[in-house]
Amino acid sequence: MTSSNLRECQICARMIRTPHHGCIAKHGYRQPRAWGGNRSGTCLGSDYLPYDQSCKAIIRAIEITRKFIAGVAEAIEDMQASPPEKLAMTRRPQEALKPTVYLDRPDGFDPHDRPAVYTPRTYESEFWSLFNDRTRAHRDATGDLKALKERLSAWNPPFTLDSNHQEVVDRSTALTV
Ligand SMILES: [Zn+2]
Image (cartoon, rainbow, N blue to C red; front, top):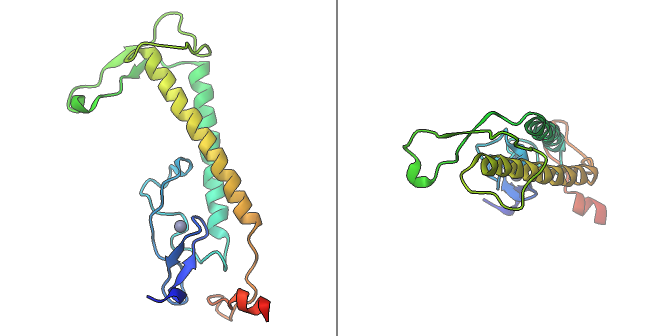
């Protein structure tokens, strides 16, 4: 592998091995929560052209992230509008083989009033921990979306492409001459 085989991924901005004249290779990524549809841990920039040639992967990632944000917002709204009657208790590692325990929603439970402290392994604790996870996911995804949009707006179309739209002239060289 030579440095000329390394091209910038549209999504993660890392330099990734790229077969000659092609799309960048599959590679992993620290999985942003927002891209929950991509749980394999494969970067969404895999199999797309590099950043200096295309921004399609970014556009797709923005769509996925927007959908995710809308879904999480809805889930948060739902759980507050009508808190589930039962919640599964999170298993401890040593309980992995035990049957799931369900916790009933207590009478008078207020899904809008988070207490300062609550007892672990109760409905309240499961509810608010789920609420926290979703709120965090929403916040992270909103940050991801902002970063993706910045990266898209910073994108410049290729300076020049050959007839096959596969090879881009080195822009840094072209621009300094
Ligand atoms: Zn990547």
